[in-house]
Amino acid sequence: STAREIKQREEIESLAFNLERANNRLRQLDKQKSEFVSIASHQLRSPLTSIAGYASLLREGNYGNVPSKMNEPLDRIEQSARLMAESIEDFLNVSRIESGNMKYDFTDFNLREETEHICDDLRGVALRNGLILLFRTDLSGNSIVHADLGKTQQILHNLINNALKYTPKGTITVVVRDDDAKKRIYVDVLDTGIGMNEDTLHSIFQKFERGDKANTVNVKGTGLGLYVALKMAEAMQGTITAHSDGEGKGSRFTLELPRVAS
Image: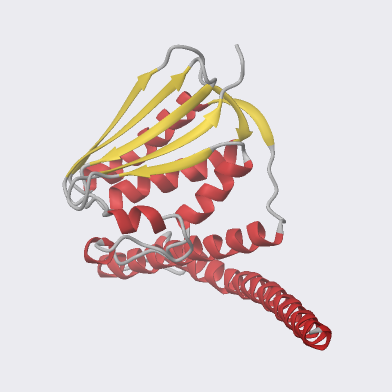
């Protein structure tokens, strides 16, 4: 009996040792992956900047008059460069988040005003897509938050742009509201788009995840935007939640942040 117990203990210790070694190896591989993504993304930035720069110089006539038939190809070059830059930024943000190198600059600012400005900036995009972009408020107190302004703007752009991408027709409504008792402020982005089923709702904030019907409406995107947005919100003591009544019934994404006391 004693010999059997000793053998079982040795087997357990061996299993624990092998498991720890495997975990260490996985951590090393994950670190190498993050470093590779960061290096590769940085290396892609330089040629991409050159492509966008030369396209802009051509459009401005720095190399002579540009025939009108060149406008469409230049538009496509600039649009592709912009989309690639956004994808690279997504990868870099994931790398920064997972390595713990994401920096935050906390200041006090008016979330209602910033949200309204972003809606004003994106309203032209909505109109070009045949959509209506509305801005509403339902506030009982101030809308001052203590957060990183640039990252909050990035989150809002992500949520509203997603609504624009995945709403073939109808309306996107952005509402800034608060809960005075909880000292929280919320930005709801509601759309009349493709909606989400339960499986999608449970996975939408994971890396490289997109809705089941997303590719039928918009094939662009890395599937990283919502993951990055959620991690940023959590680092600012907030969160992002998603809701949908089902496919074809629209979606609601809500950014929640703590409000600065009056």
